[in-house]
Image (cartoon, rainbow, N blue to C red; front, side, top):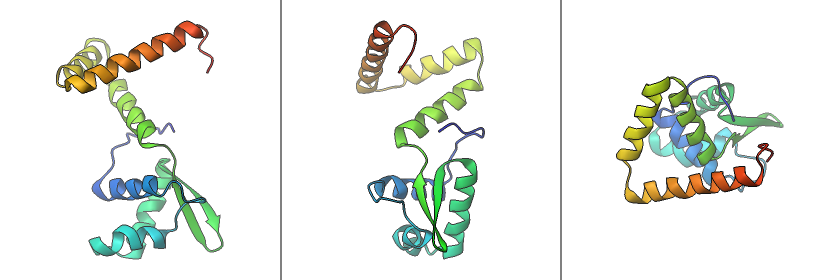
Length: 138
């Protein structure tokens, strides 16, 4: 999933996408009614509010939808990991040279030892993949 706009989710969009990720195993996605029943009722939201939010999320490329009779069925367009990665790339893409390096350094410097170890492991995996396929084919 690559979106042209910055992928910053509001509170309601975050709740909707979290619900879609939780329901990912449900073949064919979920309807607005199912989203409303799961998160809209407890928040006191109108059905039409969630319908609008899901429509806007579809236009942003955050969710995919497919017609099912008179209703739409919605699925997250990307996994949590993909969306996080895209958001990081978009943010870093706004920075140049030393600003980018400084942001990365600040991020790593403020990370937990566990996060730093996970980054090291991810970099080692990437280097191993690149060594195995220097032309970058996946």
